[in-house]
Length: 587
Image (cartoon, rainbow, N blue to C red; front, side, top):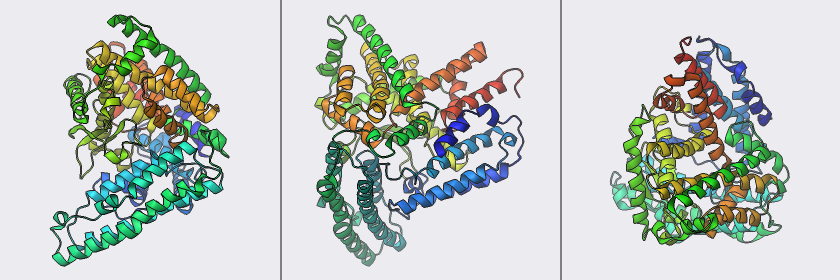
């Protein structure tokens, strides 16, 4: 069982940590890293696009594919187990740990296949959005591209149909989405089934100038046929199933606890997403404590600005006062850019290395506005070399700009853009570490750590800037409470919503979206934010105590970012290694 394996390696870092810098087993490990990378290139179209390779296959979601992937990963684990870990140099040891984590997760995929949601608004919506964008930006250089494009459209339709098959299989296994999530998922598939969406898959003449006229006509006819008779009906078929037979026996309660094997799956996810050894109960208690601490800090801001009411009234003021709302989505983007420039100016004082990739903000595609509460960061790719935060402000009257500074620090500078772009630009890393950022605890933990770092960087220059950061901090703390509450402690969605409403300034629509995200769409993923931030702060404090006056924040951040993402337990050992090199006896 992979969960037991992960617990074992995280509890035995002192044993696994390389003690000597020799190359015994290095060549074998390098070959395994390349083998895993090629596997990813064959199975992950999003990763292919990120590195600039053409998308050649869109795999359907099937149990057979999950079994094949798990078998491959187990073979990798077996081979990794034969590597002489203590004999590896430090950097290869990090590669070993990365491969153990990635292969360990994949080896478990078949076991939990029927419990893992892949057709829901967040999980399914992000993948569908990527594929739609891939077709919109597809480049036509020759006749082979035209043939490949039409073939991919048919594979796209098969992929969508496979999501319907997955839903049917889950239904047969007693894993049925709650009614509220069915409504949200149905809306996504109905949106993609619209004729305008199918029409968008037919490339314009302007995009086909490299092709001969006859080939252009053939391509457009083939694309029209595939879009109208394959892709559109595939989406409509899933929507119809969600609207009809799928709803039989659909539960009202939310959370993984209610499904066969759901409790064990959630406990597995808690470790896999946070990448630390912990339990839902520990995180729940930690969340309650953090909520109390952060509420006290917000109350300090209330007194600082001279607000006459109590904390509840102050939060209501923060949530509703007109000064925190902007008239248009464009104005919201402009506000984000103010903080972006402020953070960029301060960054050289805190980072020895900064990415060369450009960055910015852009509105979220409108078709995703209903399923994405806030937005997401889109990293640089070979075709789109600019890292962007895609913000959701399509309803500016209910989208507060109070936390705009904290949001930018998490998503762009010095958050996700710094971490991901620096990793991509580090050509010394093996590809599997250079481009893979699957360790959620590290990635989202860094985003929250970066947002916290912006206190020191001077990004939060007014009391309300600080209140915005504290409200963001409060939210990720609340997530520890409600995610574990709904998935492990049988909390109702209504109870979780009430807890969020009591502590946060989110709208009812935002709370509705977020509670579904935690309880049915991406359980345990939201736990990684606060857990990762606290772990990074603990590691920094540990380094400061060890090094004393020799501690340098720019060097510390290089230690964290320069080797790419990793599990947080691996990061602890990695920083200890770097400290040892800097201390007088290191070498």
